[in-house]
Length: 91
Image (cartoon, rainbow, N blue to C red; front, side):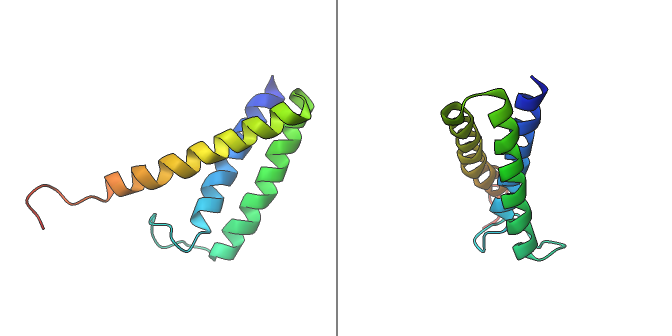
């Protein structure tokens, strides 16, 4: 069970790093180069997938990791846009 939890958390963290590596991200200025976020995200994604593979079969593990990644890549831009919105009447 610890492999599932650890792999899932690594997959979530790696997805955020991969989002931050994108030139279209709206999170803000990064304190480190985007290239570092991209390579770090890829490394953590591989590590998270490896941990999930210890817990589940190959198809299940890859499906879980990709589902977590797609969820982060769908929700993070929406949350960032919502947090950075202008209050009503200030346009």
